[in-house]
Length: 255
View (spheres, rainbow, N blue to C red):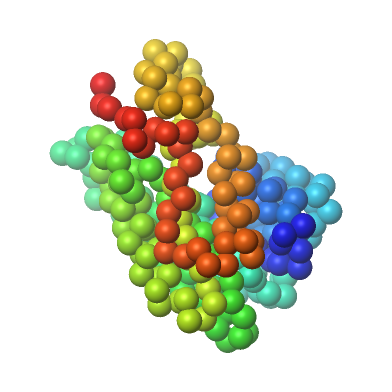
């Protein structure tokens, strides 16, 4: 197991990609801190799946869109698990709105969770590692939309484009501390957030026509990449984005 004796925090891990990442890291030997806004049935299911892998796990509720919550989350994670080695900034939101109609409230929520949260979580996490004299891993869940325009989701695209540059900058500053910082950029992944798409056969078919692999991704597709970046195998990989999209990014065209 490549992550034996490691402790990982995965934000937004009550469902979907976050749950897939948490379970895969547990399978690789890591103990887990599960996070969401509240401890609901989804959070309990993730905890059960992680514990079924024979790993320790706890849940800490926090809205990562607020810096104070980010600092508290890292502090409580260390208190409960004794240390932290891996931070996966997975929590994210998106709001559908034409650029001319987007509200300030929607913009703030998207940027706070998708960009502000990773910034201050990574800061608190890196300070913990520095003070502990250890290296570690920061892995951000970005999106193909850090590169690809997505009409009616301007705030989301701005947050992911910002996350790409934040990742590159953190990688340079934190490398001397033995901390690597990377993005994974999923394309179309079959998760609860895409449930509406799954129920519209024509839109789904149009999307699949743009994916050379001819299928939607699954949470385990992303989780495998995160497990690699969290491991010693990726010790010399930093400041980069690993795209996980079945070829969509280089084949996409707006209909």
